[in-house]
Image (cartoon, rainbow over all chains, first blue to last red; front, top):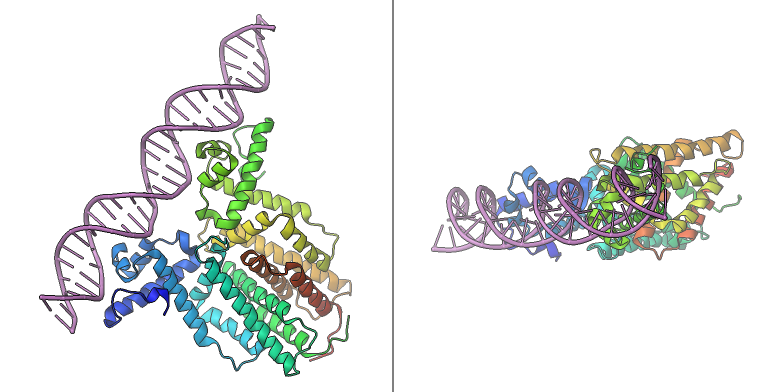
Length: 204
Length: 204
DNA sequence: ACCAACCTAATGTACATTCAGTAGGTTGGT
DNA sequence: ACCAACCTACTGAATGTACATTAGGTTGGT
């Protein structure tokens, strides 16, 4: 059970649970735009139609609210992970996710940057997550190689790092400049990736 | 002349100028780790051996100090841009820069994230810089195509976006986890990039 | 009657910025 | 060589503001 579920009441009351969800959504949006430090409880509260104290009835502290939003993103990702898909299919679904839940996606990217310092409260959480992501992608590459459909010369760990880097990077670009052709950029990349992976490279 | 050069005195006094430079270096390191909001003038001042008020003698406000550090990074980048190099050479020099001035590089990435919001004070500066970077890379690709050494099928604008995304992304990964093999990852990427660009693609 | 769901009004803290002052250096006139 | 006027380079102590958090209530559903 995630830390953030330590609320003082059971979720029996529909109204409270509803409000809780609204708070989470508003918080995600604000965190995506302003990050953790700059976002104030007052802003989130006002936008949810509450006083600051009212908000703190649902989440005992700002820190706990943060964890709750992160747990929501984790849950979202877990729900959307389909192990039966291959690498390329998996990657192509990322673009959908960008559009489906831009706040959750953006929030994650912003908070990751805010927690780069080893002393930062969420540093370990983001570091662990990064490594899991790389390992997951590397594993998909290895699977393809074992099945004989991907080129064996590719270094799975290195290529996985590259893939994660591209997606984090294009995400950043898109957050900064939402007018860029996100879909095309992703398709272009996955296409050239598929080319690298699938065939013996006779050139160079 | 950059905004941040509007200091109240000419730079005739060596001691003051020296202190100024030290403040900038300390500030860059702090900004790279903690970002703008979380960094306090007190921290920078203490580490430079000054009181907060003493620091504000050199830079009239926190905002002006920020701009001064950014100007320093711009100057650094401009000094290192060599238009005679081709795309791949240019990209390979990025890794050097990571190691040569990690604080400046990291600071930039952190601040970019902090200014994703269109209302953020530095948003326009970072957006403009992003677009220039993409255009610069796209132009290098076009040049290679015109010279007949790069494959004409590659869409320069799209590929440039991808390249920028990869570098921003691998930078983020490296900041989060300095143990990753940065050089190898970059070499791996530039190598496969060179392969894509240089030869007719007969496969698929 | 009880408890979730709020509220208003403190409280305390962390900052950036301002203020008034001190010490030492530089400069131009004599 | 001297000195008055004016700098730069600071300092410690306010000042003001923006928050997070707490305390102590009220209300309405069950």
